[in-house]
Image (cartoon, rainbow, N blue to C red; front, side, top):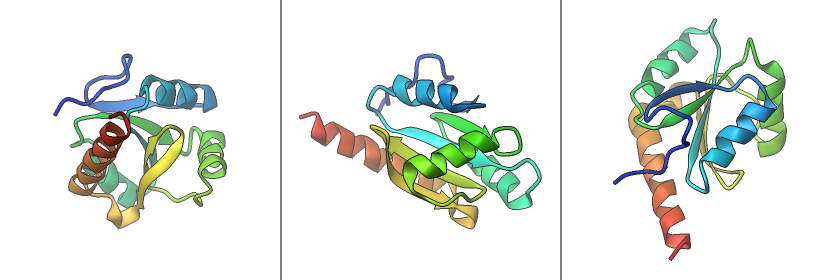
Length: 127
């Protein structure tokens, strides 16, 4: 299955999101398809392991490095109503969280399964 991907993002890999404008562009470029946001800490071993898991995902990932983008991290918490954690992953579609995980729950297979489910749900709504 081929998934729509943001045009300026690589087919897989991290797209650094330093501020709210970059987040809004990243989400808009998903064009109704699910988008992945990963909040990461450069100083946390658990986050390093989660980063390695996320690097196995073949889909663009919006990367929020919390040490460099604390304001954006707080904005994501405010928009989603989900308390800040690091590491933390969100799958979003149409500005809404459809799946989230944090810390040891972040596994490549789990993210892939949630992404596939979000894509299938998105396809069902477009019928």
